[in-house]
Image (tube, rainbow over all chains, first blue to last red; front, top):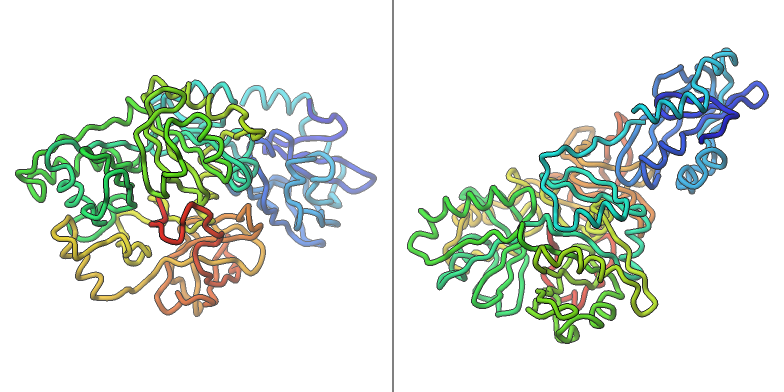
Length: 126
Length: 386
């Protein structure tokens, strides 16, 4: 099962609150579907992201796929390792392979997203 | 995130289909066939072929035999390369072209004296069979030939990489040292009848082996056995694509199709206008004399991104062409691609741009191949294969 300390979207992103910021990444299912990640295109610190709108693109050898923001807010950090080591998204999607850190407009928005159980059910039914 | 679409039930399956299911392959629709795009992962498979050996199911590719007294003459009419220079036991890269010089397919022609084998792209097999029938009232009129489509009754497996000769020799019935690049021998593998060709689509030394469909799964498992301390890796279409891209080899549907002629695709070397009459010759003669407007080139991005088929090429603020193939090169770890550009932008070192999602990324025209050929005696070979 996916980690229970965070929330999920139907687009296969995860979001985890750490203090008053939220860390965002893609799920293990997502990285497995994509295959080897070779490039991640992300916005800059200070840029806005909007809930369930694309904020970037992740590219594997096979394909390019949009990334959707789990919550609305302002980017406070972008994972610097992704430039030279994009494959960490495959190796550690829930830890070292995180994508962005966001200051959410409302931290409570995170609670509206899927729990690990609900995300697991979503995977099973799709 | 979006999930890839699953293949539907009307697709053809190769004799190795059960092997793919057993190895957890990820299957996709390719040219009307349900084929593995990857097993362990494209980068691992790519690396195995560059450093050791990889095993590919190529059974989807069409295998057409021309039999009869005039088989050679038939191949000479149908293809652009010179079959009269093709000694028994040798193979050549070639093209099928329409009357107006458009590329119908790229193929390998084998002289298996007395018969001719033509290996064609999966997606073009039925089109070419119909084309050949149509040519019976044109260039093939009066010639004695039977065309036999052996695609479904045989299997073809690629065994590619620097360790391929050493490993295959342990089970091959013929001395592979004697087998040159683009040569083939009818022999055995572990006692069973096989045609072994020293051909490939990876830039590495390697072989393509044809056996009966009934022996397909057996050969697949045999080639994947650890041998001499080397564990061959099953490779899918994903690695096949990145390997051929690094070699600047054309793929039908990308660099070449019915809108392209051989000269702009950089394949003029396999069009032998002096060989006598063949399909497309008058038009190809005219095209070769007229000169080119656009040309296929290789490029590298000078900033981050992944070029992909269809992305616009920009020069002097205008859209002047488009990317035919692109990816991050696994061997070179940088974004590379091929594209058609106007001749004015085709020189090595030319600065062009690739438009990726509305943003222009800088690129530079570089020589092909991107990665050094390591095929046997590659300096004298007739590289490239689709």
